[in-house]
Length: 147
Image 1: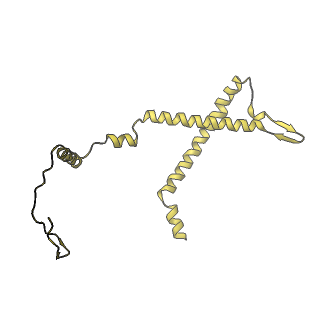
Image 2: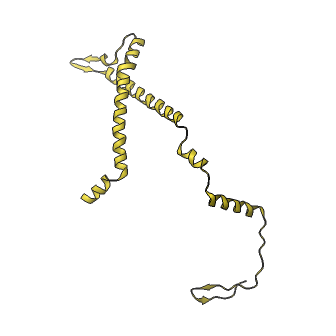
Image 3: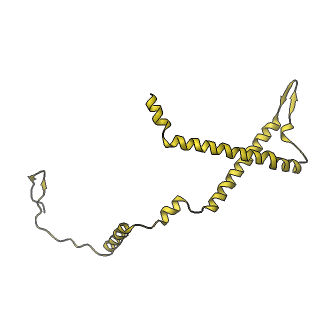
């Protein structure tokens, strides 16, 4: 069991996932700071100083903090938009992707020669010569003559 776990934990995908989680966490902190320190104050100015987190509805002794919920939705939308714009920016900075590279990749010499041979054979009619008898040998036995 230990060897199975060790094999699983040492696979490349596990390390790549760990790196992605760490980078994602750091990016999340940046986006959270963007939301809390830049966008929310601007939204507060545009919304006549409304702070979503202070919004609540009190029923008897319980506070329903719907402002926190609205704030969470707003944070999600801002995070999704920032990731969307970040990805678009990265695509513009690096327009070549793997599919474009595969399509534009030049074939090597062997592929070029094979393509030329194929094209030449396409254009010319194939003439088959008539042979009278053909002997077929399978596993050392001689079969009947076929025409």
